[in-house]
Structures are given as structure tokens and as C-alpha cells.
Image (cartoon, rainbow, N blue to C red):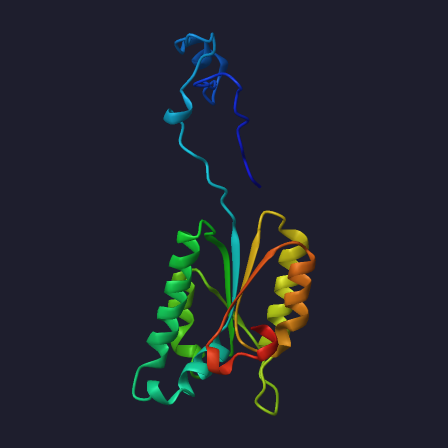
Amino acid sequence: MVRARIASPLPNPRFAPLGPRDRRAAAPASSHGCSGPTVSELSIFEPVMHAAVFVDFENLFLSLKNREELSGLRIRELSLGILEQLKARLHKDKAPMVLGRSYAAFDTYPGMEVAHDLALMGFDPQYVLVGHAGKNSADVQLACDVCRVLYRRPDIDAIVIVSGDRDFIPIARQVLEENRELRVVAIPDSTSGDLR
């Protein structure tokens, strides 16, 4: 939601302060007969968006692990560092994270080592099932949660998906059709060309 003030055609316009009427009556009047602070005294209200962040943690972890230049480094710390930087970037862009979820098989490696850290960072760990072939259901659970947010949380303006998996193309289209901002965060080498 964008909030704006309509400027007066008078030179050096003045606006009534926000608040109860008794404060407005106590404000000194200007030469134009209006009360309240001048435009230069008002702080400019920048629109604030609210973001929901959905992290396919195993996708992020394995994308980093498969990069040769990162061999020997602690991939766990790199993954958590990327998520911290994402939160800082959203805050800087005036789109703070109000909902965070992370998806992995948290009873196996690497999930079991990071579930607590992710929860402390605000990314609520969502346990996903692992099938017989070793494929987990993170994509399906993440897509269901994104749809739930799209239709039940009108206060969320931006959807951030941390994964480069092409399985998210239909949900990315749905986010855009619902007139929400979409951000995809992924490691370039492992990002599907369709998501770029």
C-alpha cells in the first residue's frame, strides 16, 4: 500500500499533524491559515513492502557444495551467510521479511545441523518427507505454502524463493499473475535458464 500526501497549490504548504484533533488545535497557524508542520519538516514516507521468504535449503546447500572453487569451505556457514545477506538486502530495500520458511529433511545431513540456526534467523524449518529414490517433497510443500500465502495473506507484497529449481516456474507465474513482486535467489551455475 502506498501512502501519499496531496500537495496544496499554496506556496510553502502546511499540513495538519497526524493525531488527535486537540493536538491539531494547539499547533500554530501559518500565514496561510493552515496549521501543522511544513513540507520540509515532514519526514517522507517511503512505501514499505512485506516479504515472505521460502528457502529450499537442500537446493541451496547442494548448489554450493557442487562448486569446485568452494571445496574445502564450510558450506553450512556459506548457506547461512547467504540467507543473512538476503534478510539484510530485503531490509535495505524496504521489504522486511515478515514470514520465513525453510524446507529440508531435517532429520538427515545437512538439515539436522542447521534447523536450529534457521529457526533463530526467522526461517521456520518445515520438515519434508524423503521418498524411496532419495527425492524429497520440498518443492511440493514450498509451492503449497506460497499459494496459501498468495490467497490468505494480502499484507504480503513480495514472494522470495531461494532455489534455482525449474519446478518453481508454475508457482513463479502464479505469483506474478496475483500482482505480487517475485524475487528468485539462486546460485547462477545451478539455476534453471527458465528462471533467469
